[in-house]
Amino acid sequence: MISQATIFMLILLAIGVIGKNQSLVVAILVLLALKWTGAGDKVFPFMQAKGINIAVTILTIAVLVPIVTGEIGFKQLGDAMKSVYAWVALGAGITVALIAKGGVDLLQNDPHITAALVIGTILAVALFNGVAVGPLIGAGIAYYAMKAVEIFSGGGG
Image (cartoon, rainbow, N blue to C red; front, side):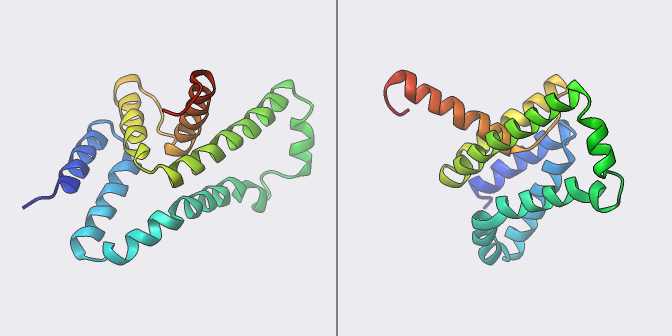
């Protein structure tokens, strides 16, 4: 008998394939393979506890590659800082990192929200030609939106 979790993952897999979201498809296939081989019993608790931090580390490594290869250095940084757009980009980078921090908190403390974020991301990719940037920034936006609702409603939701 196929479990509800497996059916849910297969539906997400179909949405990922239809939406041409390669990251989601690969993630689901890896997770299902771990589950079906029995390795998930040992791997899933670790992934749930440390996965976001590991993913952020991998993303940070990818962002730092142009610096370590010499493509970006002090000269490029100095040249960029002469542009108004570079200052806008700097501010946007700071803002998005702070928003994503709230997303990490939300995903770690309220992991069921991940399903809604994934579905929202896939719908945006499939229906509006959006770009799947991952659940962290979406979770961060959701985190701050929820905080705003709490403030304006005088309580929690």
